[in-house]
Amino acid sequence: MILKSAPSLFSRRLSSSCQVNNRNKPSSSTIGSLLIGQQRQTNHRRDFLAKTMTLSTLSSQKSWPKVTLYGDLTMRPFRNIWMLEEIGLPYKHVMCKPWSKIAKSVHPLGKVPALSVEYHVNEGIAKEKEGEETQEFVVVESAAINTFLGDAFRNHTTTVADNSDDIQPHRQSALVPPPSMPQLRAKYDSLILFVMTEIDSQSLWIHRKHSNLSNVFGEAPGAVMEARRQFDNALDAMIHEITIAGEEDENNPSLKDGDGDGGGCCHYLLPTGFSAVDILFVHCCSWAQQIGWLEGNNGTSIHTSTMGNSDENAPKPLTPKLEAYLKQCRSRPAFMRATGLRKNQVDEKKKRPINSKL
Image (cartoon, rainbow, N blue to C red; front, side):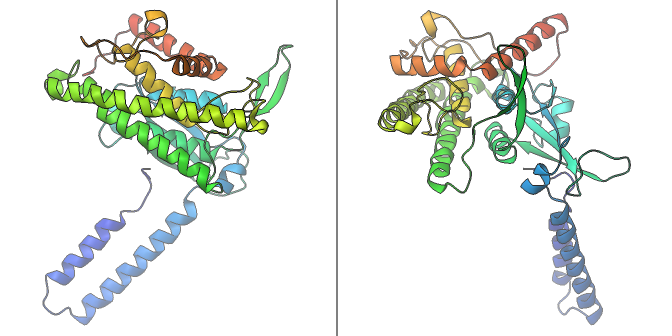
């Protein structure tokens, strides 16, 4: 999480320590200056913490915060647009490619996605008033963004239209387990980090870097071959998790009616139902299907993307359990809305091509 308005405490400490190191014996005036500097640091910390957004701040603000997602929906930002659609939170999407000027303005390395959150400093303010102070911070990394959204907007209530076109209040079931449930939260964190490290960064991203981005990162066929082996092993572990989740659902009568979405008995990765872990894993499976590492439904790819070309190796077979799991996740209304937004972006890009290194 990058706090754009945060005071530069480290630079002040570094400056003060240099003053001491440049003198064998600090004078009384130097010591006095250091004490004043330390007091200023304390004041800055106190002022900063007082302005930092808390969950109580969120719950007291009806029209805030303003959420803006930066990134290309044919890439990892799709995970976040899907999450935002699941929550039903109003947001703005800014299309930008990695390393573009817009991306560099919100991410230290110019990568995507990035989520900007703007909110009122004072708690209890229901709507924006002219002249009132606001703060903004940026969250980066797709998994961190979705975890933040799940924590921050856990009790967010939106409105949905039923079959009679009447607008009804709707509260989304928890997409991220709360810290008050440590065992479930530990499982969530474990699966999130497993997918991000073992499947995303060590497998799929290695392929992308050294295949259709080889002009930037160079060719490394040995690394890609090892990444494919890593993917196969990690995918087997995740399929095992789905199998375990199905057995837990069958043995738990309270889950027989589904996860609160009216979808019947659903075997998601967490026993409480659909979560941000499923969003992340399903997106990685789609990515693998696009590059030919995982068999697609009926031998076809899921959607058009720029994530890479197929390898010569045969795709890993799509097991019945994994196929059923992917089908139920992709049948969710939020996924369909997110897919529609991505298609609109692709269609718009065809009309107005965007110059980019990627």
